[in-house]
Image (cartoon, rainbow, N blue to C red; front, side):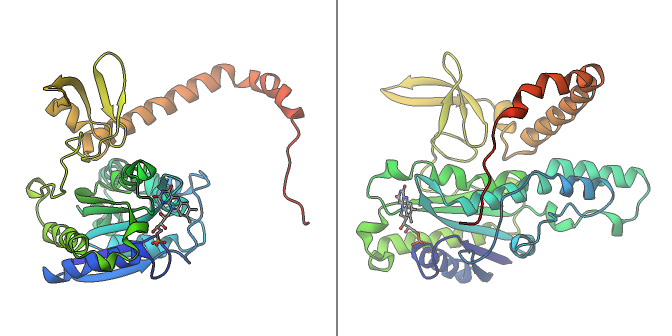
Length: 323
Ligand SMILES: Cc1cc2nc3c(=O)[nH]c(=O)nc-3n(C[C@H](O)[C@H](O)[C@H](O)COP(=O)(O)O)c2cc1C
């Protein structure tokens, strides 16, 4: 089994050390491992051009058309059977380059959309060689390590949840995560043997799950969290006692039990998580329905737009000039 570890930190910085330690754990299980550091790679933001969807709908491969290092990273992920990522916390959440990757892998690798596209191609009688890259349908165990310098956990609060975002569109399976805060006090992670052993374990957990049927893969993290799907603790309060996991979308009902906050989830709601097909399919239907509505409204009111938007034309826009 091939396990890929990606570090978004500085070359030879904390993320690199933690990821390489986790890869040692993966090697112990017999996995073939590879490591990548993205610090000097160019992964620009998604420009929302929609070319990936258009190429896919014309029978192509749903790939981003921007010319930078994204396709190199994407190819390494596609080649892997399991994925681990480590990213530094910058301003309470992961470094921006990580979000760029999440967005570039997002719509273009949405499993619900890709399954639908393969169904369409089959219904047209296209051969297997004309189907989408089969690696987009691989079930990859996934673990994330959020790495923060601060001693106070709260200064890293949006690290872990944001790292999970990479797992949704391609339906990775969360196996473990670590909020590695307090790196400043550790001086160098190598000085903390217990911590390094935990990283090693994370690597073993992910590699051990690679190739297993999805229903047999279990969460191996230290903390079950407040969400049964992504195991994060980030709930948003909807109304009354209704809550939803802000990360993956599992919804439940909050109650206080013995002075502790508990959330009851139904199986039906859990299946609607973005980490499950139910959540992705629901979003696909939402988008399809929205597109029908957009066409209807534009057919009826499109002619009004020039006049409605004309007051916005006079807002002065500033652009970079050579200094
Ligand atoms: C611009 C910037 C912002 C940072 N913001 C935070 C922060 O909000 N919380 C935190 O815990 N650490 C913060 N840090 C510290 C890094 O997370 C820490 O140094 C981490 O080890 C960097 O990973 P690396 O060693 O792999 O590069 C910040 C560092 C930089 C450069």
